[in-house]
Length: 493
Image (tube, rainbow, N blue to C red):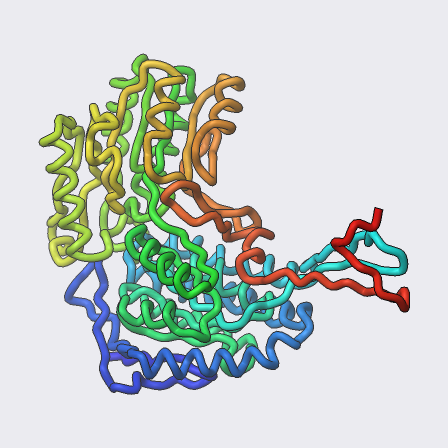
């Protein structure tokens, strides 16, 4: 069995305690991926100490020079794309055409972050006083703790890690216990790219270790992607300890299909949004709101397409949809489906575990559609994180918008319509951080801000230029060359 270690201060080391844990392929629970270091407090302390020491010299490296290394990292991600995609698929399940896209996001982010090292702009502004100049510039903060989920084990970490390092910070990264191998590969790539020892460190382990990272006094910023429950817990700690926290949490995203929509296009979007990554995306379409005039027609189209999806291991080229991540998730999908039916929902298709042949060895759940839901149903309000889609009927555009915004979350939202007025009204009024017109709720681009409102996050935006607001602080500098005391904030008029 292959054994995997932590990456601390440029060295591959076992956990101080010697403890390990096993990771399994969700498509075949008999397939053990490997034995991974089980980190504890001593390992966290060692990694943070290494990052803190590395920061002293790393933040002094000219930003464009940091960008040169970042560009090289992008080249290595590109070279290892197919290899890494298969590693990711084996440990978290989604088909390789998806995991290759996952790696591509890291490639795009690396190149974008590299270019941004030449655009970390400040502002030079006039002073209100004579012979004085005012300016601002961005400063790195220190050690960044990054804690991420398993569903995008390369893309999502890259959104945090690469800009943080490009800005001059150092990083301690805890990948999910369900996708630790990808974290190991991430370290291999940054090591080969030439980043100095201690700039990037990887700690393998369970959720309790993430808590240790958040509490560590030398960790100045925490970047988190995961459940709302854990994110809120991290936010409480950050508030108490006065450290910056960026939270990317849950979603209950909706797609509206109006009566004037291109129904084939809307169908493509609904299937991809609901069942891409087996519904295990924070941006997944888990609510579908369909105008009454096309409701039954669209439901029938949806059922036929969902039932035609090929379910199987993501490593097989013919697979459309892979497994859910583990048995606990499988049980939750089944529980939520049964609850929806008991509350009055109509089971259109799915609603069961798939156990055909070798699929019985894995965590496969059929694409599931529950019709006739409304805002009173649990399934309409709670995130499932699996291939379970609820469908609601809207009487009008206004009703559809009301249903759309009936959610404690606000990550992404979508509307399919040919009515330009309704499209622009939706773009203005849908309560989300990411809005799509005639496109599904999933799909982010590396150069654009990513994040949500309401219960989805705490106001920060990853991706694009906005991510540097998370990982830098502003410094204001006043240059006074008047050779006399000039008093600001005194009535000089």
